[in-house]
Length: 337
Image (tube, rainbow, N blue to C red; front, top):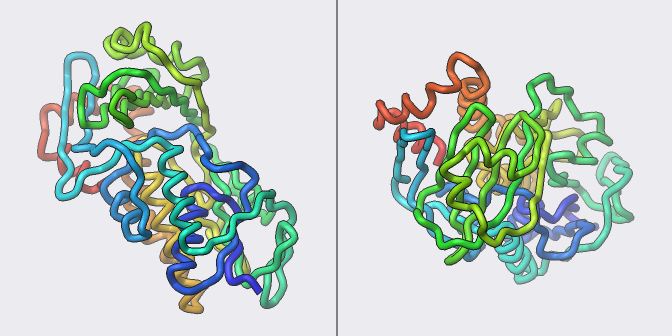
């Protein structure tokens, strides 16, 4: 019998399969899309995410990131990462590196979709395969989470993301976060002649419409060769619990606050590895508490920043505060890295 069946072959799913193989367990991944999979993503990996990938033996190609810079009009604030750098990496480069590592370890990837999930006392069956355990890492809109009745209604304002690449030499080795009342724009160097620009907002509109809220950035990008626009959302997702019976949820499938702090890859790798470690130790009941500990800081900081950005009295104070109080901004970046 398969030890662990993994629903979803994105970063969280492949991280889970790699961790399982490294601990001597047989893992099979079910994923409907061919490699590499491109999705809407800010493509900036925080230092903790780079370290987590390195632990799995995964080293994507990309551009080293030295820190975070906030920009609103003429005001700026920046903070360098302490210790190791982050990484700006194309989503396709990240997925290719994860897939290659999984293949090296003998992980089997099966093309298909996980539909009905049937659980027994000592096994779980899905996609025509039977395993001792199922790790659902099938993304933001996780079908497995919904099928198991673990989807929790969310009353928070809906936020959406759009990402596009522009052919231009990166002008900085920082991730730039441009702020406006409409939302945020993230500029991430991802190649020698390529930057990714992701916009996050509660408002619906085209990528170009969102960029109009950032005049200086829009002028820099005007007339450049640009790639297709990819979107995602609504971003906020919550689950009743990250574990139910013989199924554990990992990555975005277990819940997601927002892309505002750029910790998606780090959280995907951390929660996927934790799920596998709990199963390997024969302690699946420990996973919900471990998941809560791993994600608590991220959830609290992201909600606080999101709340400030979404309130009319505080939305315009974030960058001025970071500009006037550099030690405070540096401390916040260190907490996120």
